[in-house]
Image 1 (cartoon, rainbow, N blue to C red):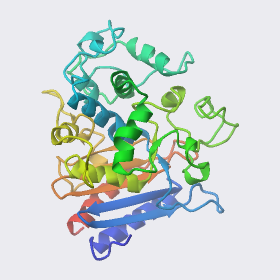
Image 2 (cartoon, rainbow, N blue to C red):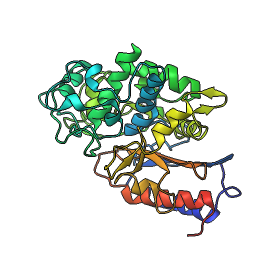
Image 3 (cartoon, helix red, strand yellow):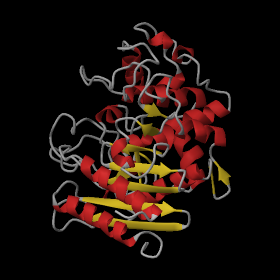
Length: 379
């Protein structure tokens, strides 16, 4: 796709330069960027799958580990769909659905608080002692003690979305990956998106992530044990979700920039795309506008980030508060501005060959330049 006649050309060139510079500095081996406003689209692939000179080039069809974008591509919308159907009460305590999640202050946690990261639960599940499986993840989550009264404190927490993914499975009576495929990916035409991609595509089409014989990288997977030193390629990078078999509410989705763009288009279409309705307009509102409890400074929807400390970089200096989106640990961004009806997607594998690369300054550049390119603003 080209953008010269649709978007501010100097800013598009600056986006290319920013990503190329990051690749040259070995901040990430490759990426795909997508910018859209109305009918105008610009998409470009950059770099290679790895830093090897003979590595395959990234293409717009390259599939990336979307990491925590899973929370907003699947988990939060799935909860809202089930709430539309009366199977989940967003204001109900989680003990209504998980009777064993008692003690330690958890009785006061509501579904809404899980969605807005105000449950008071810790940020993640412990790795030791070693554990495997979704039931073990649920038991560990239900063994946690809140550190703050639910509704009084913001902490971004994978535990919140692990519980929400299990809640979807329990109330929909089907695995989370099947629900996502039947209710979100297939209806939206997101044909390259899903959990456990090696079940349907070759590893060569997927950007690799972390390499090394560390304990984190060598956890058993649904596809067998990893060879020492092998990269994760088509196997979820997130170690907790790997322990859960590759499917979790907090991570596990693999996707392409074009497919994530279709999801964003649905949100700007108030829950519908190409005549297919995924969410009611009210559910889109809950997902994308401020739903944090009163007194919480970090502003979140029931899924999307709006104005928490994590939002400032991908939003950049031009898009207003009220735009929304999410990032992923592997080097991914979705950011949407409903006011201008524009959005950008950035997918990368910055965690290859390890997770030490810092791309946050690039996020700030992309957020600002994307808005300038889409809105025609001057630098």
